[in-house]
Amino acid sequence: MGSESDEREVILGVDGGTTSTVCVCMPLLSFSEFPDPLPVLGRSVAGCSNFNSVGEDVARETLEKVMAEALLDAGVKRSAVKAVCLGLSGVNHPTDQEKILGWLRRAFPSHVKLYIQNDAVAALASGTMGKLHGCVLIAGTGSISYGFTEDGREARAAGAGPVLGDWGSGYGIAAQALIAVMRAHDGRGPQTMLSSCILQSLGLSSPDELIGWTYADPSWARIAALVPVVVSCAEDGDKIADEILHNAVQELAISVKAVVQRLHLAGEDGKGSFPVVMVGGVLGANNKWNIGNEVTNSILKTYPGACVIRPKVEPAVGAALLALNFLMKETVANGHS
Image 1 (spheres, rainbow, N blue to C red):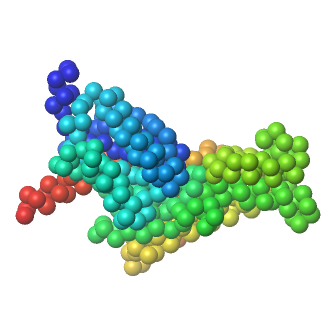
Image 2 (cartoon, rainbow, N blue to C red):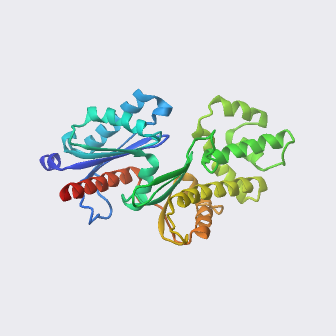
Image 3 (cartoon, one colour):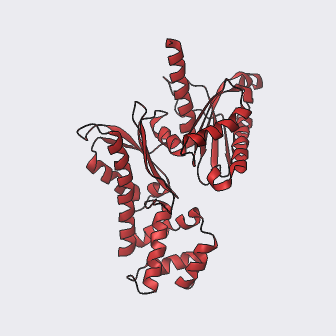
């Protein structure tokens, strides 16, 4: 069996989010017939690979490690790799792509096809099975909307981080809740159930202690982890928590609508069909107060032709399917040239 897997051609798909990096190794599939479930030969997980967060050296080492481990898990050599697609957070500009291409070129021979995208693009592909068309909404710790037309134009909205306004994100929701607690405490705002619930969940005895807790480690994910508390307060009838969630729904829906409008994804009459892929913990919560469902309803009210997709595969598989798609397009183009 070893010799068979040594000769098999493979592709690597990498999803580098804010918290972790996942790499999958998949066989070179024919695009006309995807098996279900998709065959994943190897998989590996490592830490953050966003060079804005951890610096270039750590990001490069993480990417090299996660790819090497996925190949090891699959039992194939590096020479079997035909294409690599990386969907990475922090890739927002062609100069970012060039930088990462430079790192990868040292790791792979020149015939290996390398594709670098933002991690939102891999998330979109996980819902469209590798086709770059439609809009993706990611709402986890941060939030972003990203869209593509079939002729390759693209647009994005939000995704600028907590300071510049990812207000529908987990961080945005939790930050608004913390602000509401402080406002209630010093008499600038109405009393809210959020005060006792958040303090209880953090093991603190007074809102004054929240100041120390918040600034001791202002990491986005740590603050975003308070979202379930906000949801449960809203479900128990707290008006302030309810308002925070309604505002988040509005922000998330607006970011999708902005992308759809700029790219005319719904056609001239606004009724055309296009995929909207929804990804991230904030959208997936299975509660009575369901943020994902509310966002879906808001999008469908404006764009009745939108086809909302919750992906069945992870974004790293989306990245691998993108590599397949790009590879196939290049093969067809070369065949006709």
